[in-house]
Length: 255
Image (tube, rainbow, N blue to C red; front, side, top):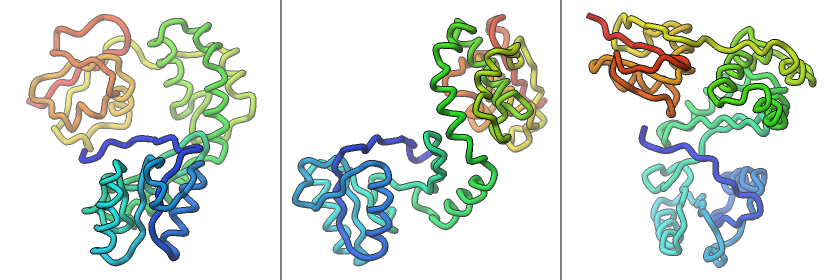
């Protein structure tokens, strides 16, 4: 991973935009949609980011250098080598945002990936996210332990669950879920005997278990490419040192 994806709050904050034409207009629309206030280079001292949409590479590099000299991180349209950060292709289901980036390698690839994801996701996904945010207190009351809440939510949001993210949901879906039995996701210890060291060879069920695990116990030879399929906050340990609570996944490398 060459870049760290971040969601930067720009509401009410100033960003410098240098350039003219269609590319600058498109960038301005995107920034204003995020709540930012676009300003000229003269106000760089009050800004948090800089965007350069200049076609001439020498002029673009000079503008980027000036903005960096004023303490700004800079994005230069279509010139990834001059960028401190890149702007992803965005799927907007407010408040759900999905960013697809290629590190500047191919904006076209990022766009097509975004369009395919767009077709998969229902328009009501944002409303579901908002309802879950409003239900935080109710979920904490029902499942006091964080691990309990996480497993219950995993089960509800998964394919076929009460809040399946790819299914159209009624406005009261979250309330109905909280009033129901609230089934939890798989728990206990689940062993996965890897067929190869290629993460693409994981079955859908194995990938889901790994993505939900509280603890991942593994052989030394299991590669990072597979281990990163687990949650970032999942505990990693050697086989035999795993706890007996929560959802534990044991990964055994192929013989």
